[in-house]
Length: 542
Image (cartoon, rainbow, N blue to C red; front, top):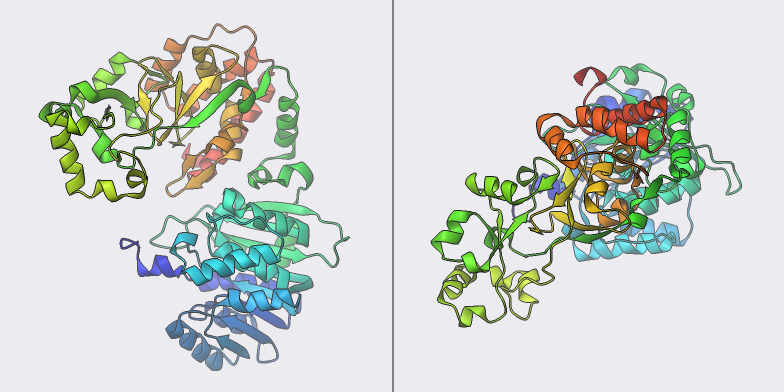
């Protein structure tokens, strides 16, 4: 936490005035009179209200925890002649009381909630966040972020037919911890539109942001149109009528928006193709054909994962074992003795040190090395201090197949021919119904790559990550009769980019699994589109 900036810990990324004005224009078009702003910062949205033509005939209840920013916002409201009550207090505390009383007094919710991870919130705010979830009957997770309960409370406090317009993290579309919010919005809202920009709006951060526009249902029986996503480039969209833009976005409902919202980026044709693919005899959910386990948790990777020089210097060859856990360890789809030797020659940390309990009491080499770890206080870390013997890493085993947790273009399976160990930056995978090489070769195809984009989540820099529960949902085509050569694929992956791999090898996998050329190409195009969005590339960047 010491390395986190004050801005990041406070969640203080303020909205550009032109975006705030777009949102307030949408509220002007609905003739809103009573506004809620859960986290007003220094008053960007208050200025936008004035710029849009609102005056002191409206009422704004605004909250800001930082006293200095609250004073700035109050002064700005006075200057702009906006009737705003700026409360220097925590919004969630007030919201909890309103939710208990079932108050729904607002025509409009505007703003940019704080982006603060749960573990960085003071305990009292953590408790408030959990209480908001409970009050609304939503499943709580400690992986949540402050913006999630802010929006949950705000939408609940909105009048029937009211509008919510906010700038929020783009991760609302895909992260697991926002599932309760997505479910709540789907239940309460008549229509939801996400404006998804190609650009990063907040300078100095990799955090992607979107605009969420939502209209609340008039009653529980009111028909819900669902969710629509519009992708924009530049700021030309800001010149449009917000209501016209909102109404023009086609929304999808039902299975397509259950869970994550990533499917809303796909065309109707691609969605129908995915549904049809799942019914094919040759297509399986990963869970039905393979087992996924997390890799080895060392608790101190820099200490237990070392290069050859460290092994030689400390005379630890008797306790050294081959391992991989980074993309640089695995340029292909086979990890064998040759690849391990190549990694060693490059000086990569490709050795895993495993010391049996009490070995430091027997062997001087181990004792000397363990002393280095103690001097670095490694034995006081949570994952090491809870062990019976802090330097003995538990649950050590290798698997037939490895899979890196994160990928740049597309995830891939790695045949573990060297029987190497994998750290928790990778997964241990065992095939259930086909041999390991067949599963590895079948995995690299447009359908599975697209499935990974739909099930996974995005991190800074456009990295794709999959957790075990998401991997288990992936769609995998397994051709009944395959002549695919894993060594040829390994060479292909090492020498070509992944788009070329999926175009050549991947389309062949789908053809053998019973897909037509047109279907295969549509799946490939859909994957390219979602990958480019994740990596913030335009269509002309391929």
